[in-house]
Length: 122
Image (cartoon, rainbow, N blue to C red; front, side, top):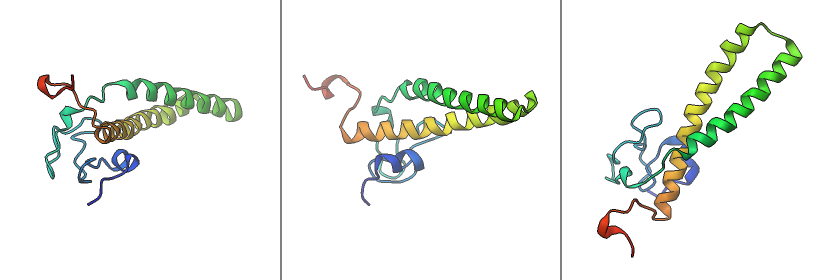
């Protein structure tokens, strides 16, 4: 099987090496390794960078949408709570999943790994 694209890895949680859908163990947490080909996901350092950027971007988009809704329809406050809280939570979780998957695939393709003593180039 051919290696999946960055987008396929992010959208489906596919292993960047074999394409099996084994990348995530939870909503946004990586599995320790691929159950199909054995690729060690812990060798990659995705970090929390995607979380900060996504939260800011999604927060800005939701804020603009909420203000637009308020200015055009003037709904009661509870409508905003029922609408924007779940939309924001879902957008952050799935956006983070996609971003982390794509970043791990990028690190895999560029052979960027965490340095472990003798594995590092000197």
